[in-house]
Image 1 (tube, rainbow, N blue to C red):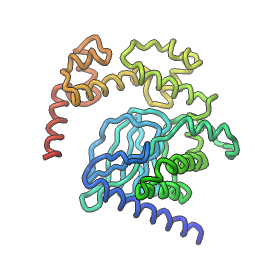
Image 2 (tube, rainbow, N blue to C red):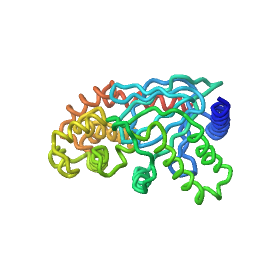
Image 3 (cartoon, rainbow, N blue to C red):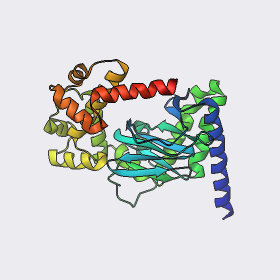
Length: 310
């Protein structure tokens, strides 16, 4: 019991320090990419509605407040007692559940290096897992001192900027190793092990992200990752909660939204740019995903941005 109390005390201490550090550096609702590669801080001053996003393989820690990720109809709520981990690039919705101006939701996101995980697995020495692969690509892990402590050292490097280039990669390597020993080990191993079905699906997703404007031929993509078409379909849907065609559609619509919002393209031009041949089909599918036609949705987003800036 004394040991558990000490571990919990170290976790709380880390979270207090992390919350203070994030609050000092991110003074209002924002995401802030730190000088440490692949490490981002976030702050939200009030609860939010679900917001569409593409989440990369990453770990998300909350130092204060409560969030949840919605993936394929499944909700993953997390707070200071647990962490969110994702092992694939997944379309999802992020939502802040608990936050206020006096007690904002504060936390960090660290992108995971699947190649580093594969290297650590190949080196051996990890305990054998009796549990079967999870068949999903997101999970909630229990926050422990062995996870909190290297994150504490990583975050504290912001106070020692000259050491970041040398020490950050070493600490991030330790974090990856600790995650492979955590209660989310099976989830990570099913993606990072080169002989796994999850690894093949990850390779297919990489191809889709690079080629989402091109026509999609499922048989060719399945063959490229050395899977039969039925097996590919089954595992892709199991891991991403959508079909390959739906995944491609999500990528296209999200990129079109970015083009309209940031590069001021009209809906028709953006639809052709991302691979649609019919602007009317694009408008229907955009409305179905984002809840409003392209023009109205972009105008509402711009009004929201102007209100926040003003």
